[in-house]
Length: 336
Image (cartoon, rainbow, N blue to C red; front, side, top):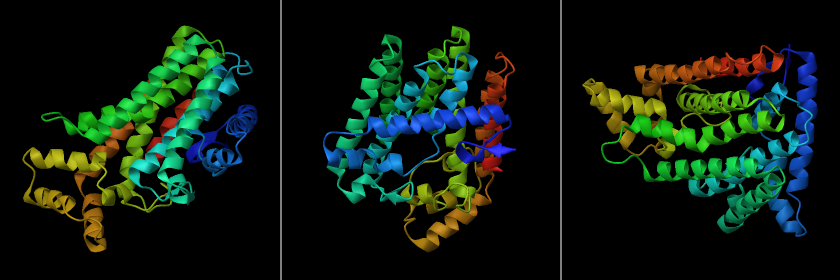
């Protein structure tokens, strides 16, 4: 069995793997070309994260979706470049808001240069994505625009927090669907659409993309608490230390508010305190790892992965469908 793509997901068909690798190589070349500018400094900043690498999850999913039509259709690789450029642009902006110093093992653009350079580079990438998608037709432009609106809406909702009386868990899931699920849904939709797949298949793969995107993000929520860092690629409890709401913490607060034990309320008070203190952070992490809220969050992630798997049922039984189903197993492996 060979390996390709994000998170070590396995593609069991050698011919499919070879074709996907060729497609990803073409996407990589497209990303380098799309981030060139007549201004050398802009080329340097725009290619900063491209050359740092990454999972290329969205292009891989798009290439798999294209297998349900003609995967060699001329719009497939440019569409994959569009979704990855859009994703990269959001990372530049996210790092500014998060005051991040490292991204993909290299200094973030805001840390290396400045916030102004980072935000303008993100804007540059959005403009290049828009230019490419304009050549793919008005339907592609509309899909990209609607996804971008959802993405920004999700970020604003996360920044603003839940409204008074709003269920924090439901709010968190809505944020994830907008910030993460929307663009992965575009990958599924655009791959199938550019390949000429039937409309029913296009819709199915878009829904699958959104559901698997939410599942992976919820798995990351679990990993922030449960991982030793090797799987997630970041220090355990990073979101916890920074006060970023993740599903295990939200489930804990929900349980504490529904007649939880004094220990639950005490743990909530610990989380409300200063977790930049290493001792308090270590205690909070240890107690959360032992709390039923973590298992409940894990079940939530697995539920979305299973929904994604069931979404594939109407599709023809081809190697690409089996590879997409295997991604659902990756969620289970990541949260185990």
